[in-house]
Amino acid sequence: MEQNKTSRQANVTRKTGETDIAIRLNLDGTGKADVHTGIGFFDHMLNSFARHGLFDLEVSVQGDLEVDCHHTIEDTGIVLGEAIRQAVGDKKGICRFGECILPMDETLVLCALDLSGRPYLRYHLDLTVPSVGDFDTEMVHEFFYAVSYSSAMNLHVKQLDGENNHHIIEAAFKAFAKALDRATRYDERIVDVLSTKGSL
Image (cartoon, rainbow, N blue to C red; front, side, top):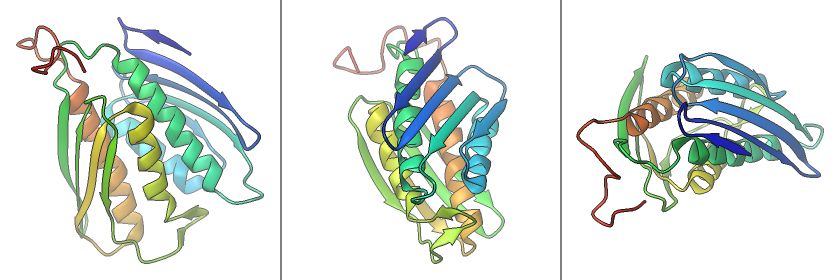
């Protein structure tokens, strides 16, 4: 694991008896993605995350998909959260808070987050089918939970409207990307960290 504060990049690997994961993240990218998890819909979501957050993202996952998709998706969330935490660095000069209300056809999803150093997830998506492709819809919660706790962010994901499960999930990933992009942007008025405590 390493961090480059100048370019805000992180490389994180994690290997267990269930998964072998490597992620490279550049917060100051252009939206390039090279994602291979073995789950087509999950690849689509992570590609959307990179593109709409303007992050450069490389993800390589070998998971026990012969069991199911659970370990692959949850552990990818853990590693991505750690990559976010490392890439953000000391948080000096960044906006810290980010939010997005994202429309996608009939769907509207809110995402708001705080890079506070205190992990918390508040989640409400009304998903009505057990899976989209090979992606179990209950894993959306597990992914965002893993990301929020591994990155130590306060994360809220809330569906405001929507019926199509593909749209709801994709809107959540895109809204998360936009909120994270806004939270990690620099503001020249912030000379240290945006906190009365002096640290995050």
